Length: 216
Ligand code: C5P
Image 1 (cartoon, rainbow, N blue to C red):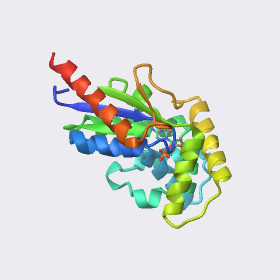
Image 2: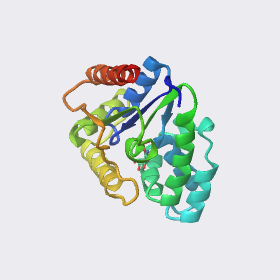
Image 3: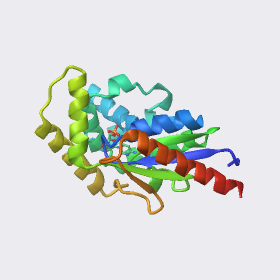
Image 4: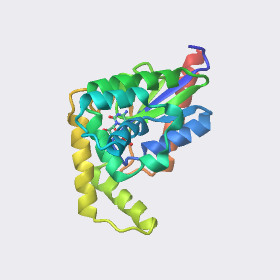
């Protein structure tokens, strides 16, 4: 890998702000960006579109092998039901193997990349230059989600959102293959008390420190 190739791994639970963080870091350091959640969502979306049960392992593995990272449509994949289904197909080891291979290839392309997900620092890119674990308490994440929905003119029930978040956390943290957890060398950014701007500034300075250490 060239001296200028830079790879940043961002993990954390749903709604902690890691997507915004990933986008801002990719813009700031001029890197490619991959939201790996979309790859699991794309598999789930295909299964739902064909009316296939989410625990049909061989169909899910075939769908995962066919996913093309260049055609992921955030608009279509952002539906709540797709996210819920994604966390169900994400427990299938063959699905993970197929998607992780594509995610690693993405990270290899010049000039480097920011990948965000659940297992980027632990499994997908254990040698990433910088690893961040962006988190926030479940009630803070539920409040943010509720505000987003209301700002778009929608209505939702706080208790229901919180219950959904807790269920998804439990599934993502409790699964046997690649559970959500911070890598031993990840920097923890808790956005419960810190706003995203402060978290972003902290992340930029961690990346700059890693780049400076490389020059030595
Ligand atoms: O981040 P997002 O909500 O789009 O992810 C949807 C689901 O995909 C997560 O709940 C998780 O189960 C799964 N996922 C994963 N590993 C990743 C990214 C997402 O298991 N690297």
